[in-house]
Image (cartoon, rainbow, N blue to C red; front, side):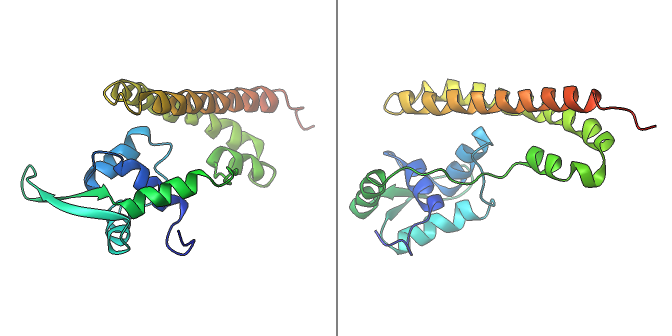
Length: 182
């Protein structure tokens, strides 16, 4: 596996293609289902499988679709070998992006009042993601060969949501208790 060929996103695509294969629309749908893990732009779910097929990691076949023929990607031996090789590398922490943490970074520049006003709006987003995780959990039961691993991911993501909820509560408490300027 050449590091020039495969990025973390490439590995994600190979993993989403899985045992049975998937079309680009399926890949995008799977990523959006969890939403928390859909970190690439929509077009990349269409372009990356094509690139991986050109490099020999994926094979293509045509199947009937709802309105027209669709391309389905499947793992090749080279793709499976790349996943095996990747799986043997040390796991590292990938830096994360967080709108909530960015809001706290700029709080002293924009004012606590605006941060206190906007931070609780995150709760609606958290509720939406929690509902999507409920759907993902139901879908996991339909994939017995992956169910155990998908449920591990879903439990982790639920705890990550809880951490965000705690952050909103902490911000509300800390900023509401601030001393009033004379």
